[in-house]
View: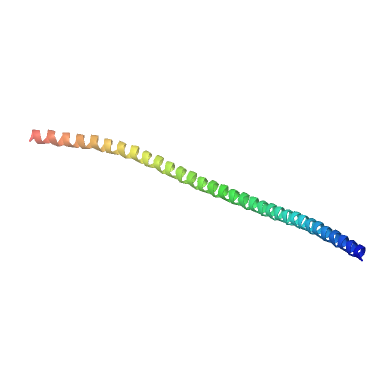
Length: 117
């Protein structure tokens, strides 16, 4: 009977040891699966974030381009208006100068006529 108890005890120890080994293997495989799943999730999240960042950068670039085009249009319009104003200023200056000369002649004639009286 002692022999049977020793065999059962040995068998129980073997089952206990194999159960521990099996549990460790299951934990290792489970940990590896969880790690693999987390890596895949992070990779897909990173890829999604990369496309979002790329889309945002493209949108910002388009906005900057539109803003610069608007700014260029404003600048060209302002320069055209400034050129027109400068042309008007030159034309008006010539007219004023001509009117001053004519006024001087008119005043000169009046001065001469006043002297004669």
